[in-house]
Length: 147
Image (tube, rainbow, N blue to C red; front, side, top):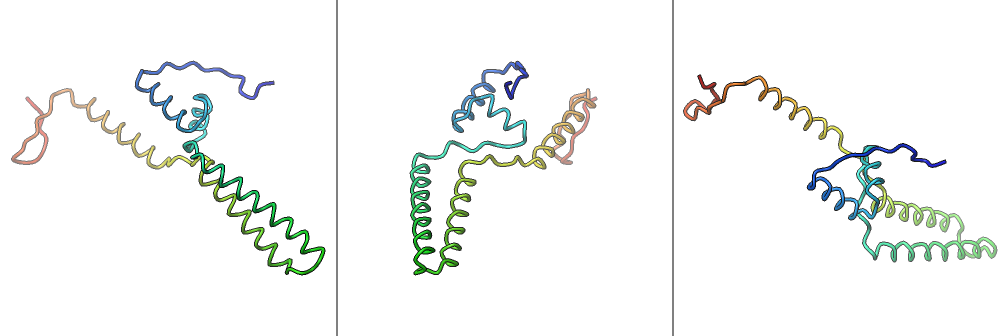
């Protein structure tokens, strides 16, 4: 059974659709996946640069070599295994940090979004409540209703 079995159709203005296309293209994700991330409150990161994958392959090779050295050291007893194990843990953490920094989506700043929404609602209320045009009184630095 499909994981995403519900469909939802939405219409966009040209400018909105172009923005969605640009954002999804920058991340390398399909538009639907990009929207799912946004609904989940996450902002996908842009597609990593090509040298990122070369760096990750190199780190994996280094890790593999460290594991081979560790295996030999444990059998022969020539290298302090405790120190080597600590080095491997630090290496693996560095690898995870690089992947997190480049690939994983970031959480949205909901406080900023909520504040903007409240500001827009307050502005909308102000414009609805004043049916008369407003005039700015430059001398007194305040708005006045036109009568």
